Amino acid sequence: MLVNPYYTAHKNRGMLKGIAMEVKITNSALPINQHDTDSAKSDPLYALIEKFTLTIQEQNTVIQGLKTTIQELRSDTQEQKVAFQNQTQKVEELENRISELMDSLEKKESELSESKELVKTMKMLLSSKEVDLDALRRLLFQGGREQKKDKKEAASQNES
Image 1 (cartoon, rainbow, N blue to C red):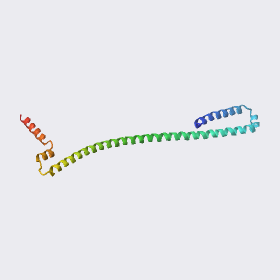
Image 2 (cartoon, helix red, strand yellow):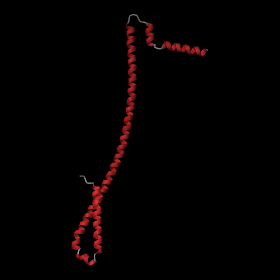
Image 3 (tube, rainbow, N blue to C red):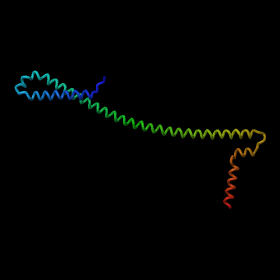
Image 4 (cartoon, rainbow, N blue to C red):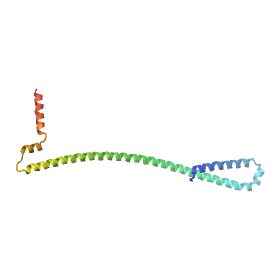
């Protein structure tokens, strides 16, 4: 079973203060002539009280040191918590950036695939003995006819 040093020190402190007060009251209630005659009997008691007092002071010093250590640990914990939050934020930003780069990569791969398909079709057309110029134009200028039609329709609407 672990013993809590705070509890032990507090418990001993109260007991020792009680003993010291009892000795003071008993000693002060005695007549002066009895003080001298009982000095041989009371010396061990005073030595014990002084020893307990020193023990209490040492325990108080240890408790103060523990309190300081606890405060330092709390401060360190706060600093670590802030650092962890900053790192978490940086990781989230990096994840977002990676996601954007992956989307861009997929788009570029799609464009590359389309370009490869265009080159393959052009090679096939050019390798044939007879080049179909209309097919080549349609391949190179996809949507060109639709653009011409759109321009003609826009011009005719502007005139009317």
